[in-house]
Structure formats: structure tokens, C-alpha cells
Length: 310
Ligand SMILES: C[S@@+](CC[C@H](N)C(=O)[O-])C[C@H]1O[C@@H](n2cnc3c(N)ncnc32)[C@H](O)[C@@H]1O
Image (cartoon, rainbow, N blue to C red; front, side, top):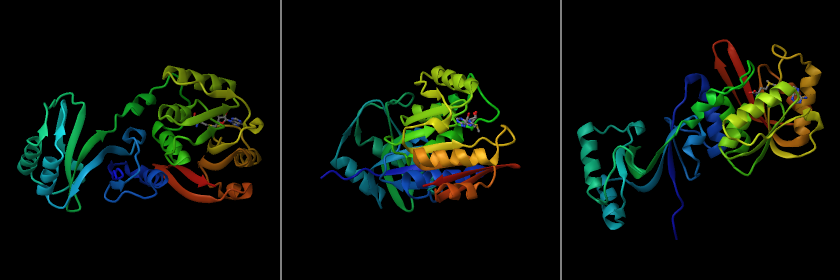
């Protein structure tokens, strides 16, 4: 029987997003990274999280380097256009000249012609917690950075990083999750969700924001799945909603209207990710949702709360 796949994810985050990273990792992998390394049998595309820098799909895992060589001799790899590298981010204390020697010993056991500049596959060696790992190394393609420049922005928009993260949290990394962003503004979460292959839709009460969301989606060749609609008229049911709640500083919204938005999210979705600038726990509880996880993103005097409610 074929052994299940196993992966090493290499994680990094700015300090102010540490809590968000941990919440996203708990949501996708049911565990948190230790020393910015996470080992899991869950197969998650490393380009789908801003916090995953790269991923090693483990082919061989051994206490001794010699045993990696033995395995490579036993199951010969025949491959063209590959590159071999050492994963420094695993922070093992292996001096440069030794790394070089290990890689050339591995290279001697791979049949094929390497291509250092534009390889089709990157194979890598790393050492972590006194164990050697060899496998396929895939870096984050960072395509999401291009989403930072949208034709239409909005003072109130989520950052691409937070939008991507809340979509992963809403879906627990599961592509079949049906997600709604009922107050989607200029469509920041819809752009991130659709570009990662999630089933996500948006509604927006402002005609101008709806048109801008459609323009943003069109700009990235994504389906303009946003309707100009008051969320309270939504009839469909969803697995998850993402509610970036309108806030007094930016919109004319009363506490009762905020409560109505949370109540409607409860009616249309089994789970809600609530993004707020202030403590709205009491509104969540009043709606019948329970807060099951949470984090805060603090940058200077600016604090956003992200609540996972079920
Ligand atoms: C905080 S903004 C969302 C920003 C959005 N996350 C983005 O990145 O562009 C809240 C949005 O909710 C919309 N809104 C307020 N009440 C609504 C309702 N009843 N139905 C749908 N949208 C509503 C507002 O027009 C506003 O665009």
C-alpha cells in the first residue's frame, strides 16, 4: 500500500500578524507551527497562504543522511530539468561546505540533466529536529501580491493578506465550502477566494461598491460573482459567511443595524468569520452564534478583531 503523503510547511509572518497566522494554521491544519515549521499530512497549496513561504513534500525521512542516499540508490529517480537545493529555513546547523557535499552526493544518485536556472522540479534536502528530509520543494509563487494593485480601492477595504487569511479560515482550507461575503465592499475577499479556487459569492448594498467589485474581479479575469443586494434579502444558505462589519467611523450604521447584519449571517450560514474594530462579542452571543476561536491584528493604534463563530 502507498504511504500517505507528508509535508513540511515553512512559515513566516510579521509580528503584528502572528495571531492571525496561528488562527489560519489551526483552521487549515488543526495545529500550529513550532519554530515556524509545521509538519502535516494535509496537502495545501503553499501559494494559497501569505504565511507559507515554501513546502517540502517528503519523499524520504531518515535519522542518518547515509540512509537517504541508500533510499535514492534503491528507488532511482530519473528526471530532467531539476534543481537540487538545501532548505536553510529549517535552521539546521550544517556548514556550507557540508551542505554542498551532501547535495552533490544526492545529485550523483539522480539520473538526468539538471537545470539550475529554470527547473521544472526542485528537489531539496533539509535537516530538522535531528532528522534528514528529502523531497519536492515548492515555494509560494506570491501571485497574490499583484492583487494589491486593484483598479478600485476603498478606504475601508481589507488588506489582501487579511482577506486571503479569512477565506482560508472560513473554509478550513476545504475547496468545497460554500462561502458568502454578504457585505463584500469592492470584493477583496471574492478576488482572493476565487483566485484560490474556493466557492465564494458576494452581495453589496451600495451600487457603486458593487460595480467596483465587479470591475476588480474582471481585472483579474475572475467571475464577477457579486450582486447588488441588501444582505437581509438573501434566501440561499451557505457553509460559511465572512462579515467585515460596517463600522460607525466609515459608514452611518447603528448598533441595531450591526446586530441585524450578524443575525442575518446566522440565518444564512452555519459558520461566520466576523471582522470588527471593536468588541462585538455580545452581539455574536445574542445572535445565537458561539465564538469558537479568535485573534486580533494590531498595527500601531489600529486593532482589528477576527472571530470564528459557529
Ligand atoms: C467594512 S465594508 C466591507 C469592505 C470589504 N471587506 C472590502 O474589502 O472592500 C462594509 C460594506 O458593507 C456594505 N453594507 C452595509 N450594509 C449592507 C447590507 N445590509 N447588505 C449588503 N451590504 C451592506 C457597505 O456598503 C460596505 O461596502
